[in-house]
Length: 217
Image (cartoon, rainbow, N blue to C red):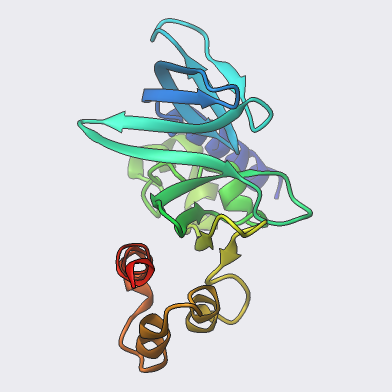
């Protein structure tokens, strides 16, 4: 058992080293200032530095509003959002923004795996590669250690909402019911949802339809 704990600890250190990727980014502060540099996310905090050779500083929701990563012309923006009344703001990705904004949160607050890996980083292979198995020894092969995929949760928030609505949280996925409540002011969306015309994979399209079409009625 002690050997297994040692293996898990070694994997933990390897993953922290290998999966904290640094990308070009723009960090936006609550006071309105913004700075370009390099950053990566680490357990609901932002590691940011202006120059590649600098030592990164750690920022959180106290001073930062959001951060945008720039990768070959495409961008991904993460914003600190208070999801519930009892929890501190969490870094969630903005999928589409408008009168109704769709956020995506990857990883569970109760998953040990998601506490080891940054959920927004690429995961390692689901099983140990031969070289790493050789380094860790026979016990690693017998323990059959693997890395599961993180859970993904979607939230919608309107300006009048104090907290966003989670569409697929809970043991039972009631996303149609939750989405219908959020968009109760758009009969077309409600009817399509009740008629099973939309799938959960269409959630971005549904939100964009609400912002572009429903609000124009």
